[in-house]
Length: 170
Image 1 (cartoon, rainbow, N blue to C red):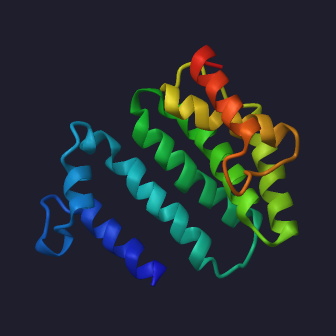
Image 2 (cartoon, one colour):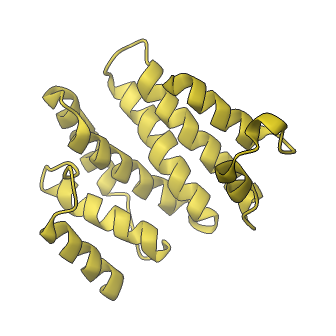
């Protein structure tokens, strides 16, 4: 089912004009955004990242994690900040790996995701990112450096950290 849903999103994002089968409130709103054309490639990469995770024939591998992070996180962040795509992609990769590591039941794969995120963390600067992306990347960077994945729910310390990034910009 997940693959069918991802294919629906890809078709709707790549179509030059909205087709009747993609006539949903979500797709209409997304395609109606002022910067949709700039964000389109990043959004398609986001779909590719999720697809890499669910369809990987290799199982849990470093290559799969790299493709997932580049697609899901890099694609999302690049779509939201196309004017700073390079910084956004690196930050998005760390964020995606941090989020994945916090939601995996496979401890070995979670550790591999955190190790890869930690390697990528040195390339991340959040100062040029839009505030929301800086907040997402900031909490991910902090936890990755401590060897932690995303918590399963918003914790008081995570909330305070997000608030601090919102107020200070770092």
